[in-house]
Length: 220
Image 1: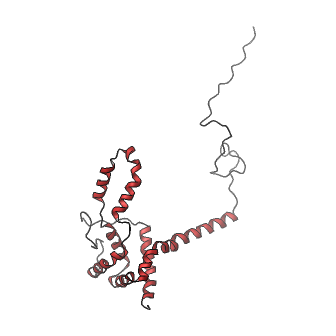
Image 2 (image 1 turned 120 degrees about the horizontal axis):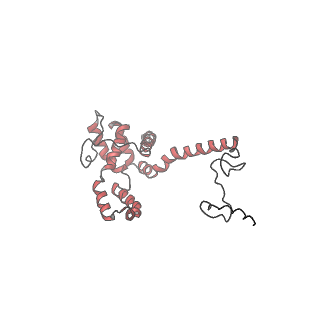
Image 3 (image 1 turned 90 degrees about the vertical axis):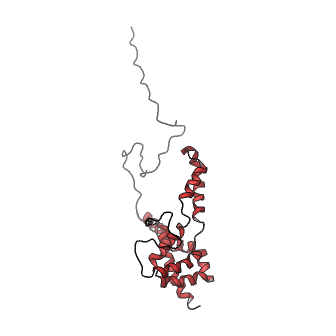
């Protein structure tokens, strides 16, 4: 138990850094000319490491434990389903779209992306205790709640700070008002960006041009 606690603390910091790298969606690296993607766990980073063989072996044990769900193909199917409403208008055959997408989507890409993320942050020596931790009951539970924890450490805190800063500044500052006549229809007390209410029963669209009345005909 004494060995699990330090590992868990180390993992919490590491997993947060890893999850943030996923949220920020860094640009994909070139695949080094490997058609169809690299084999399972095969490094394709440009940088070389002295412990590459040992790391690849440890990652092969790690990935089944941290493999994300849904799978790559399931994610592609979900996205196709979301896009399918516009297929008819775009002249796309749904069956051909499915076959074409599935041909280019690499089912191993999840392992490649996660391999890159761990390879950048960990050595082979550091990765081995993570494998043991994720095999434990505490590690399995951590993976189940990881998204909630990471969201709390990042987005929830950012949202709180943003909300409090804006609330405080709004209480301190004055409302911005536009001088009268700056914008057609702008009235005193109206702020920039405020929608101007249309009078009731006003017709939609621009007003129709009116023809001025003809001058009176002089009497004979």
